[in-house]
Length: 262
Ligand code: SF4
Image (cartoon, rainbow, N blue to C red; front, side):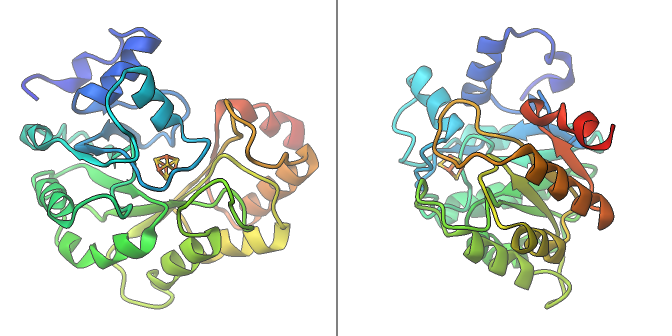
């Protein structure tokens, strides 16, 4: 990257911005992501988890970028300069850096690159936290604590995806936290796209993982998940408030804050 990425954020129409997410380097945060996330960075893209609702795959297909299920490495992204603006950089928003299709030597180079940042934190979202945790020793010494994030659409099985089950994701991430081990990282949770769930089990999972924040949203473009009642969403939000766990509602749930808490 040869110019300040902060200069570019407002220059693109929605479609061009989507294209940029696929084809260029650091991209300024858009939409209703957790506010501390300043940038997305996609030095690799693609994913072998084959979630049927995957929006990244739709973008890749739209712009004819290649087979999404085959993972791709873009070493030229490693020439970027990080903004060091105190924000969080989300790594691989267009795929899953820790899915089985990503090669070890790609991951190694990407993590090594992260050591150049002095004032950015890196968020590694993955539906395979087990592999992310195997890489934590390589992240030891980053200037800012890395964040390992995972998705719990529900506490139940997810027949729409080949990723590890929510129970496996939860167990792996929980066991990496300070409750069980000396941890060098924080955690983040995405409850998106939220699918019908068992209240006490899901709340227990979230509480045990103790994420720095939770993002919650519904499925926008497909219909693979099971509808969740407004009452249930309100109850979930009340639990999160009760446990003082910060949450961010995606656009399609934004109205629930007023609906639930007046
Ligand atoms: S894990 Fe994420 S990137 Fe991979 S297929 Fe599922 S939704 Fe898409």
